[in-house]
Length: 115
View 1 (cartoon, one colour):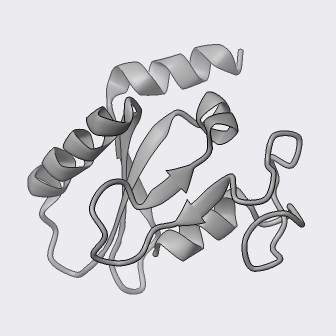
View 2 (cartoon, one colour; view 1 turned 90 degrees about the vertical axis):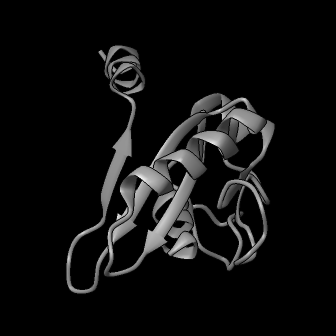
């Protein structure tokens, strides 16, 4: 799932890993957004300092049928805090669209930046 999220963030940038490209190519350089290895501690996406400036979120990705949102959010929040990022949880069940969980204040900040 983290690879899919990374590809969505960087699907038009020739610098993104895997020769994909990035909608955010104005700030994306090679290695700016990378998937971490499964089972590795911390956030599921590695963000370079340049990527963090534009996308300040510690992402936790889950793909499973059984929902455990409170436990996932606790993990996501703890990992994001270590990285000094805002927590963002993305999860998906089979044959369903991906859904995103984030703090309301973080959402409002994103909306305000884009006004």
